[in-house]
Image (cartoon, rainbow, N blue to C red; front, top):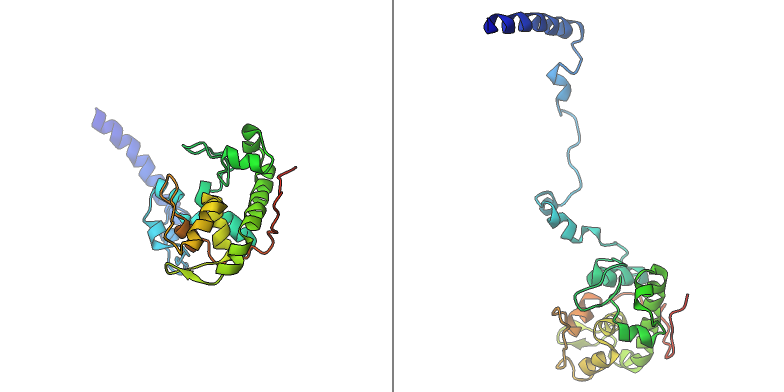
Length: 218
């Protein structure tokens, strides 16, 4: 009984299928439509990215801005290293925002409300500039003295000095330079002054003007 019912159902369907293929040879029922012949399948993608999955893609460096050695490139490269460019993040040590500022550093540039700072991207950008200007004033003599020289195999540049000062403070950078690399402090996550000197070498930071009293104001 069941076999006869299935047979009675399939027979009309088969007849309809044959008729459809005859009337519409170029329809989606014709598998030749799906041929890839003549298509350009050479997509511009890294092989390691193509093989990666899930979080591996999110963690790769493919999302870093490609701004060359410009000042914007310097800012964004440093921000990506600090926080993946996230204005609203707080790390395990309490450092805040896109550039990972500590509360004490913020006070030096006139910011006394860390919570307000965290939710204000414009203020964070101004804080970065103010802190860099202040650091450049403190390190102005060291920049002049060491720029272009090599310490421990790393070429010293102004941008590398400023990046290292952002990491560890200008006083620590002075000690690194004047000890010719013997004093190479690292932060809680293992990043050293020397590493920042190398990673952020050669960017154009001439837009940053040395200013002893630089403040971040909206």
